[in-house]
Figure 1: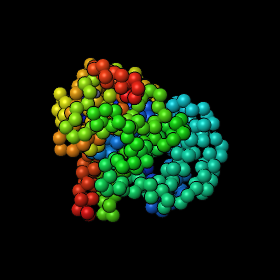
Figure 2: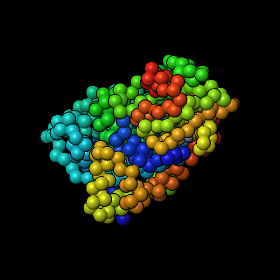
Figure 3: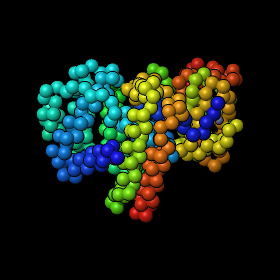
Figure 4: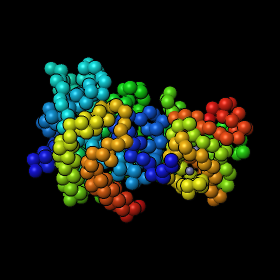
Length: 218
Length: 184
Ligand SMILES: [Zn+2]
Ligand SMILES: [Zn+2]
């Protein structure tokens, strides 16, 4: 099954804090680029707020309030907090949450060739369950034909790709699951960069890509 | 309604902390929310000592970031929930969780009073709807937010009025984008 909108369970999982780090990264990146997803995420967070408001209470330590005030007085003033909430850099290809993982924008990525001009960079998520990587597909180039052993979430950051399901441009997300086989082709206009998160290795259908999969662990 | 008045009250308290560093307002917020945040952390699997520590950190963050609170986009409880959730994950991972880029507030982009009121009403309706849910369904929703597995069926099955909140926030974002465009 394929969906072109980020599914509710991913957004709700992000709102509840139940996703692994790689999935947090792709959801946060998508929400940064898509206002509809941002509004849907906010509605799930509103539900979290309602749960907190209506939930039971726990007994506090005797000096709880005083200890908290001591923390407040011992930490940086409000002005330094303002800095981190500042507007993201204009003209950046990656949203800020992704730049934090890359160490910069597109020019800071440590690409490794995968063959046929395709390059990838695995991002360090310290995540046993899922893998986040950036994929670079030259304009007009096809990705190897592949199926999926688990969920694959693809977010387009630059250019566009086309597959059996349509055209996906910057900010668009595609979620592919077990039954899906597709052959994404980068649109001719521009080289395509995607953030791809998988919770299982991809199943490639050709022999050569299968070997590549073993060596490159994609 | 009672809930709506409550929400307006907490918004006023939090805004007082944000604009005037009002310690009495903060003490009031603390009395109401600190025991809820601590209970949330305990239900999420923290022991009492860790929950107390993490809760104090959450409430200190509330003080430091209060000037960034936007009553046109989230209720007070929702804003505190997101701080507590992020803090819980950061403690488990020992690194900062990736968060969506902030939409920057331009100098003239203060939230419209009508938006703020409407969001408060929607939030009150949502809280009321949650209260009215059959025990089993409410339990499921709570488990999802206390860090259990995510339940994709919750939104579909419970009929909670999430759509209204979504449209409300969508409008606020559009207004914000518009004012940013006008400013540039
Ligand atoms: Zn596809
Ligand atoms: Zn795929």
